[in-house]
Amino acid sequence: MIKRVSVLFLIAIMLAAFGCAKPSSEQGNDNKETPIPQENANASDSRQALLGFIIDDDGSMAAYMAMYGFLRTAETLGYPAKLFRAKPGAPAQSAVQNAIDEGCTGLMVFNPGGVNDKAVKLAVDSGVNVVIPYHECAIPGINSNVVADTGEYIEELSRGLATRLTERSLKSGRILVYGRDTAATCEQFARSIGEYYPQYTVDSFNRVAVDEEGAIEELAQYILYNRDIKGMYVADSDLASIAVTARKRAQNVFSSKGAPTPTPVQGTPVAAPALTPNPNLLTSITVTIFASGLSDENYKLFNDSDIYALCIEPYYEAATQATMYLDKLTGGDEIPERARINRPIAYADTIDKYTAIFDRMKEMFGILEQNG
Image 1 (cartoon, rainbow, N blue to C red):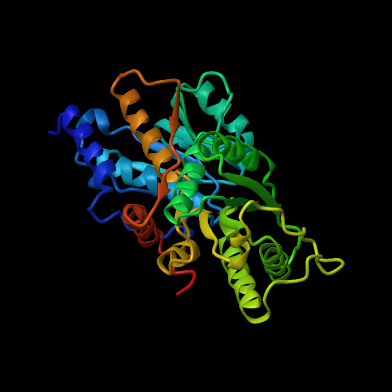
Image 2 (image 1 turned 135 degrees about the vertical axis):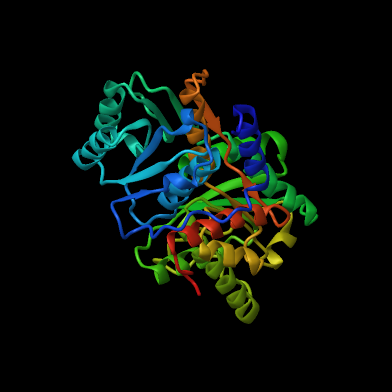
């Protein structure tokens, strides 16, 4: 019989090494509810409590990574566990009731933007242990809220990008924050860069075009006319390839046609080059790109050296921690009412441990390569 301290030591090793055992087989979209068979649990009688996770299996990497973190951790801790897949609102409330009827004593509820507040309240009122992973939750009575960092990581991210510019021996230049709505991120970037790397400036460019080709062209034109841009952070996970393609297009145009006229063509949504203290910055287009979100596409861009670093959304880590808290609650231990999960930034020397999790998640849910 595995003692409690041994199990906690085991999960600590799993988090450090990201596990090496083969995950339980599961086809993610075939069934509404997916259990880990109880015979997989090498647990004491106190660990036969069923754990449940109410989540909208919408096909997103966010959902898959959260579900994998829950199932993998529950299995390692020796708990039978079940996914209750349900759309937000009334279906999620029904899923909570189903979980309670099936004997779940601990529940996690995925609650982005408060869409499942009523489901969370129902779970709390039922008397089961309730832990909410990743998203902020203001419902009274939950045992713990494991929240992903939404802002503090930007300082580390901005300093990492600026450090790379110093490694390139750039004594000045501009960092661009690119995405659909960059105001808040740009402000935090500018504050951090201004404090630690005042030799660089920060600007933003929001995607305007609806279609992909238009988005590539508008960003390529902006880079072409603003060649003092030497670093870029792509805030939206699905826009990394657009940034990479736009950079290449601007480089090709500059290489074949040289510098554009001082004033952009009428109707082109770009600005004239900013005055810089070093005109040599305008003689080439070399932009170091940091991107956001782990996906097949972004991982390929990383492997091809098109992007230098990835800021990863910690869905797996938040679900893992939340499941560990349910374990502690089952054993009668105290847990914090609120915990914050860091948002990791992966470079060449650290990317493998995150992609190992990503690959095992795809194996569990039978996900084919998106770019294969």
